[in-house]
Image (cartoon, rainbow, N blue to C red; front, side, top):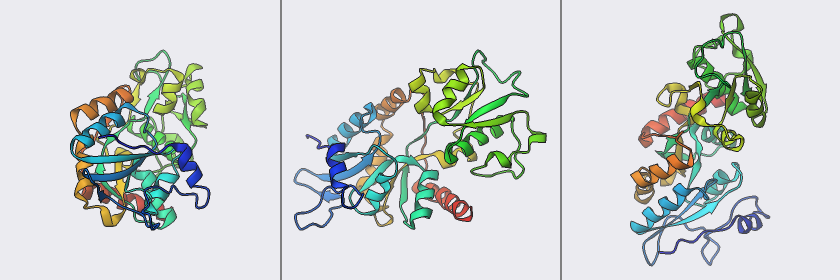
Length: 299
């Protein structure tokens, strides 16, 4: 089965009036959802990673099951949830639970996680070092954007290098660090500058996208967060749909197909061996999301 893609250029044109992707509408102007086509089921799925190998393998697996994926590529992180909320796509796969919680609280929507995919651990790098030995007293460069900054500080908490004034914060800020009880201090920098800090000899927490651009081997990390820890739960990536579609059997089958060994192998290659597959039920993901949304609403 030939799978149809919609180009980013076409999407941009359709965004002009509403700032939302408009695709897959019926001739009468109404939006279609997961639908039965002449050859089987058709599902419109949005992602920011359409060019990666894993998506090609995933599409092939879905086609073999009679599911035609209409992959809608996005070039930013703000529009896939808006498109889903407006019924322009049926499901998306691009975000972790913390990002979803921030969107739901900010927008008043009730988008729902229906299946876990993976976690990409966030790691600490220190040039010419292979352990944390001798790091006491150093200042660690951390990304300064709110989401990555909080996670980076929690990486240092897990490493035993930083103590928080109030334990258990989901998104701590530098002001939440108890400096008198911590072994290192932190220096927030633009995430794009973290590889530069590393190259200059400063310990730095660097996310995967900038590791790849800077040509830094992920295996050089001296510490990374534990993907099985509670601190890592907000960063589980997930399939997300509207609440009324959370029990759709075809979308549930997509979740299963993402965990096919061939798809997982492609994900591993795409991430250069850093991604960690996660299997959590939809109910477990919703429990985590509820906790994150409560914290987000209170912040």
